[in-house]
Length: 246
View 1 (cartoon, rainbow, N blue to C red):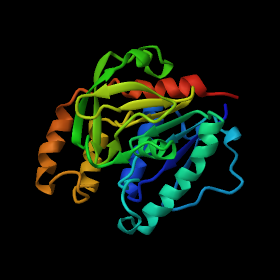
View 2 (cartoon, rainbow, N blue to C red):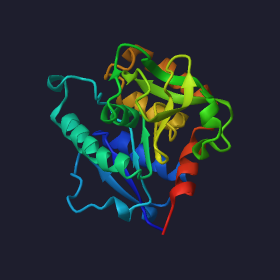
View 3 (tube, rainbow, N blue to C red):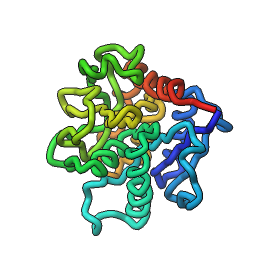
View 4 (cartoon, helix red, strand yellow):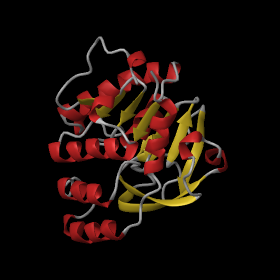
């Protein structure tokens, strides 16, 4: 089959490698079925043709698209520019896309939606999500319970549904947990690839990045270990199953 293109935004190797392995495991993918590009270390090749891929998966990262330019590191600015530059083709050609956490900010920004830190911040932990009526009929949510827990941790959020998008999953703390644009372009605010072990890694890596008070790291690790989070990975599995092509 054509490989899936995995774009990673995390400049911390430990977090990036753990996320990459999670995408493989939860998506039931092998390394030879993907092409991994770490945008902190390499640029997207100019000759890259999205038609050569079954779909695009974008991981999370510590940056915020809503931050002013002078608050972004050079790496964060370069990564954001690279991902945003791909969105016109992805949206116009309806190329299969799954943006995880940071990805919903990128998609929302490209579509002219409001992404900022005014509301819907979620501390590192779990969020109780609910599949909407439109989501109940969507192939990406096949087999996903109507209500489920998901790992979250973000400082900014989509404040309104962009024009042309369908609202698929909501929660009380952050209404736009999953959306779809067109037929094939998806984004989640939660992390469909994450499990308790992976989030424990991220807590250690990002304990000084403003997601939570560093003194709370131990408490959050224990909370993640106790969480029963399994349903979100079905979304990644459905994405791979739906779009894998020759």
